Length: 68
Image: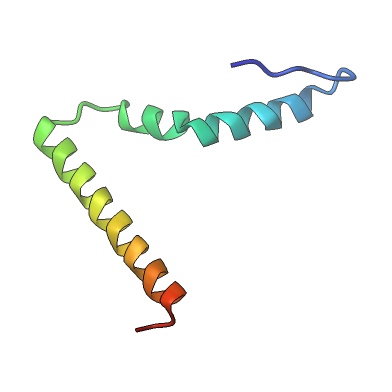
């Protein structure tokens, strides 16, 4: 990953770097790796995330189709 500092503006480059890291999911992964996660806990977390995504997709689909 590379960020270019223009006109010696380090603050702007730092904001761009943070935004890129956020978009890539680096912060989320760092948070997850702070402590050991048992495989069963990992499966449960991923399954819950999948359920949330599916429900969100259904809500968006209902909203788009006009609440049928």
